[in-house]
Length: 349
Ligand SMILES: [Zn+2]
Image 1 (cartoon, helix red, strand yellow):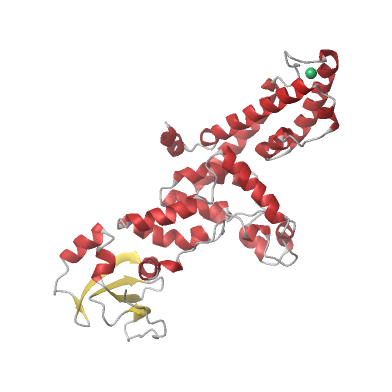
Image 2 (cartoon, helix red, strand yellow):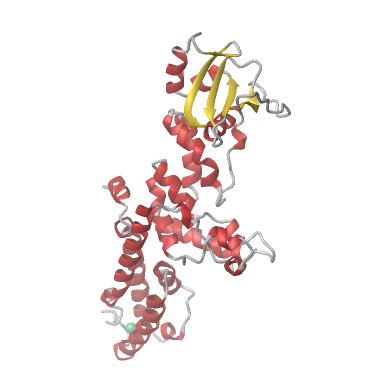
C-alpha cells in the first residue's frame, strides 16, 4: 500500500492553491482538487486503484478521465465536495486506523460525519457499513440494551475522578448523533437518542458546560449534556412532540391497575391498602421525573426493598413488578410514535 509521507509541508502558490501536506503523493496517477472553507483550492495526488476498487462511482469517473484537464502533467478532476470532507475520506482510505474505534466516544459522530456523507455519496459500501455499525453500537436498539447501557452509565459514574474526564466525556452525546443519523440515513438510533435528549434541560449544553462558567457544575455532578445547536427545527419539533407524548403516557398510568390486588393475592385485606401506598409512592416519583423508564426500572428491580413493597404478599409483589415491566415495554415500543419518527416506524412495519 502506498505510504503517506507525513513530513511533507504543504506547498502554496500565488493563486491560493495548496498541495495537501500528506496526500499529494509523488507516485499518484490522478489529482483531485476541492475548495476549502476559505475559498482556496486544495489538491490531492492519489492513486486511482485506491478509490476505484471500492467505489463504483469513482471507477466510472476515472474511466472517463482524460488528458484535457491536467494538473502538473497528471489527469485532474475538480470535486464539488468540500475539501475537508474529501480529505477525511482519503485519509481513511489510505489509513483506516484514523477512524475512531473507541466505543461510546461522544465525538464519534462529529468526526465521521464528513467521511460518511462522501462514503454514502460515492458508494464506498464497505466503508460506510463499518462506520455505521460502529456508530449504531453506541445506541441501544432494544429495551434490554437500553437497560444495559444505563447500568454501564452507573458503573462508569462510580469511576469518575475529580478533574475529569467526566461521565459526559465517556458516553454518547445525542445532538451530534441525531445530526449524523438524519444526514446519513441511520434512523435506527433515533428513538434512544431522542429519549435520552428528552431527559436533558437546555442548560445542559455541551459547549456551555465546557466553557468554565457556572454550567460546568453539570459535568462535575455527572450530568449529561447535548450539542443542542446541531439540532434542526424538525428535530426540535420531534423532541417537543415526544416530551408531550411521554407526559401524556405517564398521566394515563392509573390504568396500570396497580391498586387492584392480584387474583391470587394471599392477604387481600392487607394488600388492598399496601397497593394504594405503593401506587402513591410510585406516582410521586413517576410524575415529577423526566425519565419514566428509569423510574419504572427502579420499581421493577428485584432488590428494590421499599417498605411499601415489603408488606405486600408475594403474589401481589410479583404482580406489580410484572405490570410495571409491561408498561416499560409498551413505552419503549412507542418511542418512534411519540417522537414522530415515521422512518423508524417504516423500518419495523
Ligand atoms: Zn396480595
